[in-house]
Image (cartoon, rainbow, N blue to C red):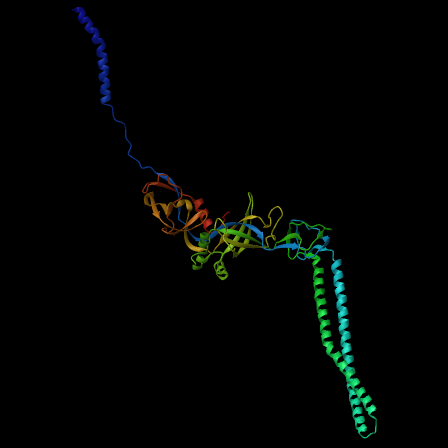
Length: 459
């Protein structure tokens, strides 16, 4: 019995601590305080915004085109002969002043032709003078023969009267009549000679006119032996040397006028229509547009041509001249011819190049300012709607009507009055009514204003 009690005591000594520990643990677990909870907070997204600017918008259209000379002269030999002299700068790329002698063809043959014709003209004029003198002499002889014929007729009449009285013989009357007829025949011969003189004079004058025309042609040919620059130009495709024989119709070289350069710039139809505004005539815009309507529409349009390189750019003032006769194939773009006057005037070697043929240029057309226009970056518009920051910094979405679009911004025709806080960054998970933290993007706002006013725009 004692042994059983002893064993039971040992078991209790083991179980009692375990039971006490379990009880304490259960107590601590059941009486442990719960975790502290914070009140729920709303997520806030930071967004870039700008106040919708109202500006005096300068409409602008941008296009590109290749420069080409307004005047191109292709020198072609109109004569045959050997080249005896050339300009010392008759080389491709050289600048030549107006009226400078570029090339001379041997003029000997053409000078001889002029001399021969001058001699022929002098001979013909001498013959005409001789004919005039013969006419005067013949007229005098006619007058004398007329008087002589009258005397002979009187003598014949007297002898005829005398023969009736048997005062003279009949033979003497016949001889007198024969003399009268001979005198009459001589007078008629002189009159015939006078009658032929006008036709002879006409033939000589025709020969004179023919020789004079031939002389003028020969003198023209002689002048053509010297080829002068018709205007200030830059040479191209020179393929002639001194001593070379040239034939009639042979191409010698080309010359590009440097007084004006034109750029065939291409623009989308809708871009030009937005530039010109809400004119009824803009519906007629195209290659077949009437010249008067074209001048009316583009009267206030100014143009600038820019040549852009990696580290520099050059700009020229230009003017809109005309529309090309056709649209660009493939793109169906309107081709506007823009002219730059005196494109070589301000050229500085190594710093500012002239506007040369083949240069690919940016062309900007600007119209008169349109006041009170609301503009926004293109990225701020989402499916004809914009996000705004409303009262209590809550996100709102508002539909707008879009006007014309430029390269980096659009015009808001209606829907905004200006100064609204417009979201310009793309809001991730945009939910209307969500809380946002607006941050004004001053740099973007200033850039947008400069672009809208056509200030500092780069091609």
